[in-house]
Image (cartoon, rainbow, N blue to C red):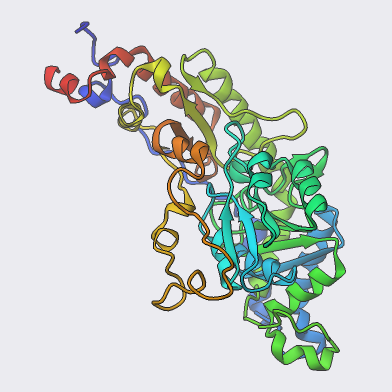
Length: 438
């Protein structure tokens, strides 16, 4: 084994750690948000929703102002706020008219709510594979998974880059489907100079605490479709009570909830929205510096950004070429962690969760899969999404750019840690035997 001083030796084997500090937690909340929240609290109007057909059915002044500002910012006819984007997804699936037993194609490479929003309406998630470069839905796999029972596609703009929405919308038009854009992680991302999330029939963004902008919890649904907007508002706020007095005749999925966002959150959201473009630019600048610093490391692929879109880097996603490196991901991950880089060695494959593997959701008898509404035996076995599964099992690494308020110096430390690990790859070969020799 080569003789290294403690600065060169991997921290995993007793060397000095490259990053000797904790990065500052990302906090986009400033004095403007504090003042806005204070004014709402002092007004005493913390919420103004009524679950009845009334002028306050649509909420209070800050709710309406935030929705108006979001519609203007994203260039859509309608923006509807929710207490979470999970609630927004539930409303979106219901608003497009999904029936029990309908199939909705979705990616396995996402947060669980993308699929459970489908399950909420007793519809059936069908998982298509991901594109190996963007991690978003692969249009070819979507096409291959369409059946006579398919009614919608849910595209997820994972990690901060839009899915190939033109291709997905073309498939939807060909087969008479609706498209939902789950753009939770990509507010402010562009696809052909338009905002991701606005090019599907309905889309939206998350406002929970570790996103680019946040209100603590919350979500924004966006659409140009008047009916989808109205139905989303009804599902948000006790639809079953409101439809009669409002004169709504289409009662499909008019089961209401309390998915309402409050005045304080919306006041904060108004101020946060003003800062979104600046936050996105800052993240992109730091990601560019990180990419430039990592270029040339063999067997390591930095994020691929397609020419017709940009990336807002909620997560900075890397792919390892294990064959070229000759080192298993677990060893590289452990070495990076020891150097102080909080990098994740997996995302998740939703189709492999126990609920889908055992087909057990509502009750204890396998509903909806064992009921008459499920029209075929939907396959969730390992192997149906080989790209997503290989990424999760072997080659993916991800750094949560939105988790930290990074400086250029912090990025340089991350680069130094990666380069230190890569200069010692030979020390990581052979598994535990290396640790025994040190």
